[in-house]
Length: 156
Image (cartoon, rainbow, N blue to C red; front, side, top):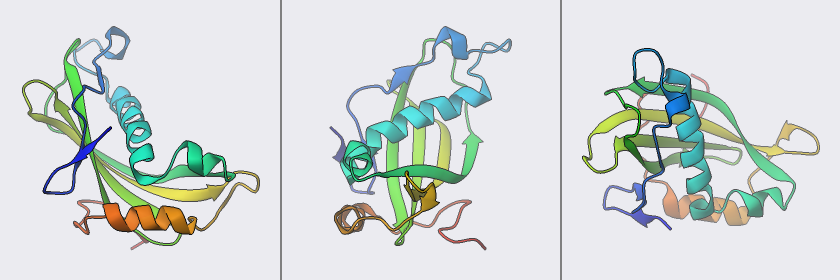
């Protein structure tokens, strides 16, 4: 279960995972594609906190990533414990904009940040659909209103 800090980040008291041997490239650091794998794990950890995941799928809806931005600030090496935190920035009737942060779990320095624009999708029709009202209520309680660094809720 996550806790919320004063800045609106969802934080967990356990590491997300550690840098796995198969995630390390010939430079001995985590390969760029595996940052996205770790962020996908972080998304799975966030979803229950904001009413997504299984409850949404039971209604025939899901979340698809429509756009993503990722930065690399510091190397993550094999075996390092990965911490993750997440923030809901903004939402509308069909979209959700989040920021995730990856950090060294024991030392605390930031390794990377990731912004993602998610869509609510009707899984039977494979089309964008509105969020259920109960989910929008969860978003209202979670959204910080912080400005995104790279993405926008709507196309610019």
